[in-house]
Length: 532
Ligand SMILES: Cc1cc2nc3c(=O)[nH]c(=O)nc-3n(C[C@H](O)[C@H](O)[C@H](O)COP(=O)(O)OP(=O)(O)OC[C@H]3O[C@@H](n4cnc5c(N)ncnc54)[C@H](O)[C@@H]3O)c2cc1C
Image (spheres, rainbow, N blue to C red):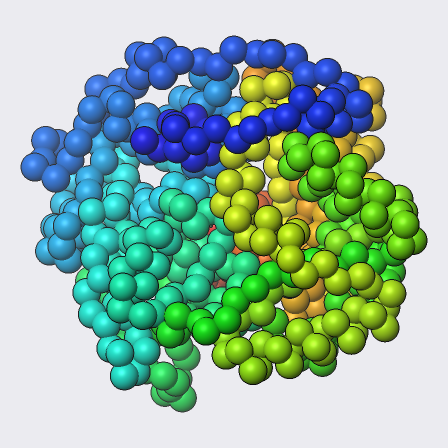
């Protein structure tokens, strides 16, 4: 079963080795073991639903608690410390377009808010009910998850928007196809959520970002249904899909979506390259991208993330073995690891590997072909479970991400990291901060920063620490005119920073469009912008 107060399934536990724990303790100090609030204690806080009885509505306290928060740091704090104070009044799980339409008609008539809910994996507060007198219905799309159509000739498939990553891939694999959208939240996140929050997967160079994969579909708004026909391309004015992409539940509920799919690849393999330092790795990375190498996945870890990845893997013997081997070939303390994947037709893949190896060698890189890439692939969806172990040992962990031109990204990286490193100096607290460049474009690269700090037994104090760090890093991004999010979206956590990148007219135009679809402001209020 899905955990109610952390990441993942109850039955899976990440092995947090004593050596990994010691690594964290040595840097930030020993964490305090702080007991979590129990599910029962939170259920007791749930008040009577303010919504009318309806055959589609479930107002049991357990169901409402489990849909009350996502995966942001404040969400974790609220659930784990037991300070959560708003819950949806009920949860509906529609199974047809008619269900969705009747829910929205009732919401308009009875004046209650509606939050579309996919996998609840949002990390920016997308699915949290607002405090206030208006009741909230969370519409969990999990029961609207079927493969509705597959066009084997055109390589397209239509799914119910509640289909999760594994459901989509399983349904396509038996027919010889693949979507290939792999955010790290793949296990739970859904097609509707990916579209509404503009998600990006790790293998996007081969399969495409969600903007490329999403061909069309249906959006049900309080003012009626908006059809977005699945054209391969169209020059007939603005593309309405772009109003749905990133709409974060403000526009309506996506019921189904048609996506581009690919045949199962003939070849797929992942590799690691070690570089003596960041500068060499960075130069090789840029060259690979700007030479338009046919990789499917690509990232460059800085020296702290390279070291932390090895240490936190808990594979002590292997880490020591790798360390001595790498030192022998001149890769010391400054070494940085690049990971890349190649997917597709075997002859093209062989050629890409040759080209990647040549660029790596030119920049003093050492290619490791067989082990580390495989290990990354195997553990790509299980590493998020480590956040549970860290939390239970007294540590908070969060990530942030942006994108900058190649000419600027390294400078911004240094400044963001410095802001985080020094963010809790007044409290005398040390942090672990590390980064990787996660998604590359010929003109720039996205920066993904992870930071870990100690929690205290006091929920407010812990939240204050996070707020300080988040604000310090976000202000650096805004100061350099960067985007507040490359892939996680806006929700409530990034809302204060959105006007600085969209401008006044941009914010007003966005608001006007969503208000045309939802004049009574019932759709996911408070996300993207504050309601007037
Ligand atoms: C461990 C972890 C790893 C992650 N890794 C990545 C990553 O690699 N790349 C990435 O892009 N993101 C990542 N994320 C963030 C998150 O998974 C994405 O934002 C994802 O797209 C959210 O999908 P979801 O189905 O869980 O949506 P939810 O969290 O349920 O909702 C997100 C937003 O979409 C809206 N929404 C959901 N379904 C619909 C619908 N049918 N119609 C209209 N609106 C809808 C909601 O109202 C909300 O505003 C990660 C999160 C976690 C916790």
